[in-house]
Image 1: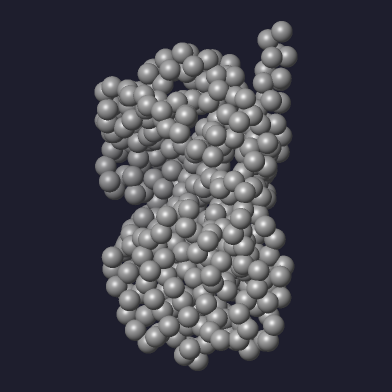
Image 2: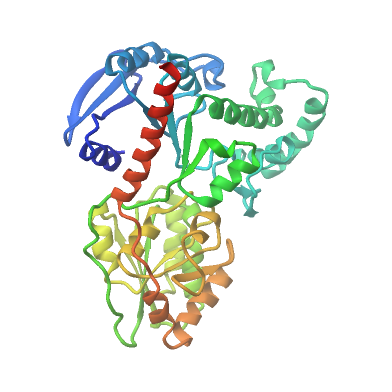
Amino acid sequence: MWALSKEMQRLGHTVTVLIPYPGSPVSEEYEYDGIRVIRYAEPTVADREFLRSRRAPDGLPVFLTFVREIGPSVVHMHEFNWSNGITLHHFEALKAMGIPVVLTFHLAGYTCRTGRLMYMGKEMCDGIIRPARCAKCSLDDSLPNKAMARLLYLASLPFYGLGIHTAKWNSRLGTSLSFPYLIEDLKSSLERLTGVTDRIIVLTRWYKKMLLENGVPEGKLTYIRQGLPYGELQHRRTARRNGGTIRLAFLGRIDPFKGLHLLLQALSGLTPGRISLDIYGQVVDESYYQRCLELTGPNGGVEWKGIISPEEVIPLLTTYDALCLPSTFSEMSPLVIEEAFAAGIPVIGSNVYGIAERVRHGQNGLLFAFNDAGSLQQNLQRLIDEQGLLEQLTAKVAEPAVFSEIASATNDVYENLVKKHLSKIE
């Protein structure tokens, strides 16, 4: 948001950032790097009706008061929440005011209730919303007891088939048995959102295709790829040292979905000393961190480096031979791929939607089978065995888009919407 705001200012636009202030009965205003920021009062106390988006947030009138004061030509939303924060009620209110609205989809939660596109946690999902199938997966994801999740799923199907909406029982059991209806709500919310949004920006071609398959009109969608908000790219690896240990880097949260365990398992089966690994990231799951520490034991070439700032990432990556991204779910478009390419190094990544769109196997990186440590190990072994492979991959790494390009494409969306809006009111 900061990078886009600064680029819009550079193009001559006036920018105001309006965000909720959860739990606060009063609003506040401040300036950040020359950008006006307003945190509007959002004192809503969540209850079942609110969490199911049955009633508007208490802060909505305050939000609309600021919108009227600002008088925007376009409102650009960056994500929203089905129940709290920026909701469908905000979009519908802006639509009623006749203000063009743009929304950027940064996450996959619009078509997947878990947001990860992993069916039953084991295989990649096609992302098409199907009430019964998605309910089974969503229940499995929600409950640690998988046997109970399956039992509740099977019990929910007769109620769903008979049209009995058990969520109206106003109990935990009723909610658990209503998952097919919750998936129906997901689909209807996507339809409502599409209806009140003038333009949806998607960061990847794969998610645009998924939205089309879920019935979103193509005329509503604009693809604008991910870019780096760091200005000119001045750091780039030019050549790899001849021979010696291959230096890998892992950057990401230390949690199961980032797949660090797969990388550590893969390394344990390789000849010691041929590949080293430095791990950078914040621990968000302590038990998983301990599990990874145990896996690190046999790997003498593994070092834990802690947390680094965003400004350090690209210069740091130029000191490595490759980045490993072993994700066990499909992120929309991981920014760290663009950072690795900016540093001039290839990516070894999971063959999932968000990685496979940018990493081309055998060209600017290598892809291994989803959630498969053995496949990752085979690809790492290739780097050791195939002389010149790493150099070939490195040579085909192209610089990513800089943010000025992304801002220019976004500005075109704004200008087209404003022209269309003005033509309607003349």
